[in-house]
Length: 243
Image (spheres, rainbow, N blue to C red):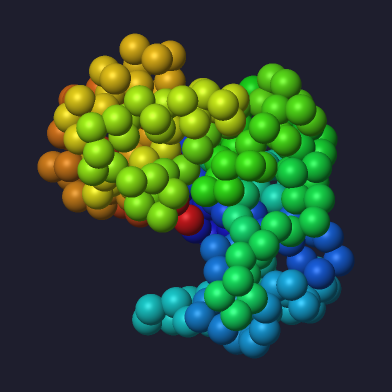
């Protein structure tokens, strides 16, 4: 939460976050499927309940140390902060993972929509995933929800003559408004191409000022960065702070 609060002081439009599920079905805001890298605990989120996760210090391995314990937030906490700050929220629905095998947290789509509706944030939330099959489910649960397909080389092969048209077809079939693309896959024709098909283009993760400015000038609709401070004095469209 300290990172999200700090982001509010920077020139941003949105917070980007990842949601996963505890063993007892609570939505938690955390990047990894295991907790060793970032906390003082051990284990897979699939095996840990919310009470156990709340006891951990998620700043345990912060470079240089952190002056106070930071608890793992749940989604309602971050949505409440964003609503008060009048920020948008980009929610990535993560897949579960155990021993290299990916799966789906049971009921995660329903839980995300439940918490977003409870926070009265539906019109200010973009729900994204690399698991494109979950995105039509979001639209069934909340037809007005805004969804986006996350795109990397793991889910899309860019080096064919029909790559972009095929991507548009798949994204449209998933009922998405947004394409959120790995920065390394960006090509200059993409903004006009996606806009011509009534899609918006977001790029992640861009961490130098020259690239941020170049992509903003190219017509990209959203830029996700770990360094929103670099946007001070730069012209941009939307800036998402990735935490």
